[in-house]
Length: 163
Figure 1 (cartoon, rainbow, N blue to C red):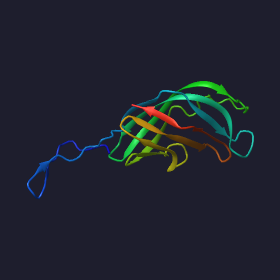
Figure 2 (cartoon, rainbow, N blue to C red; figure 1 turned 90 degrees about the vertical axis):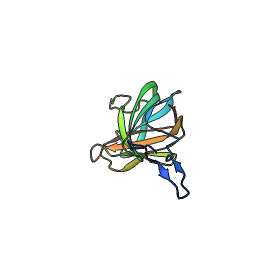
Figure 3 (cartoon, rainbow, N blue to C red; figure 1 turned 120 degrees about the horizontal axis):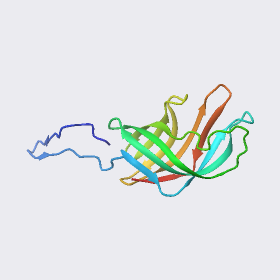
Figure 4 (cartoon, rainbow, N blue to C red; figure 1 turned 45 degrees about the vertical axis):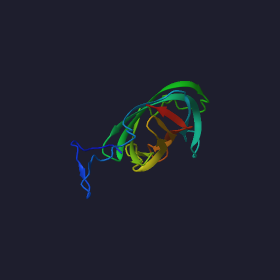
């Protein structure tokens, strides 16, 4: 939980004790980075009616997480791309298609769910992560339909990031 209070408030118990409220043990806001490259799969339907993997690469991700309130965050994702393979599509998108990209995040206990609210897919969950004080890990699977017949996106193997 990320506190949005600007003033400390004492808790007065019925037995007369005065204590401070509990603060979050895990502040998720900040910059998180993966130390090792993660496999990323570029998805599109450029040569058929079904969505398939057309390129793969590895990426060292950076997540910049900004608190909106106690349970909601913005997550800006960027990355460094390595080892591009399997160029099986005649279109020529940027190999890092989709970077940087931003998602909304919902925090519940030690879970972070990423949601696409910006790319033609309102309220679509695209990633599930768990986090501790210094470790954030999970996967992303994102598809954007930018016309009635054309789709692009990418999915990842498990990403582990540290603060």
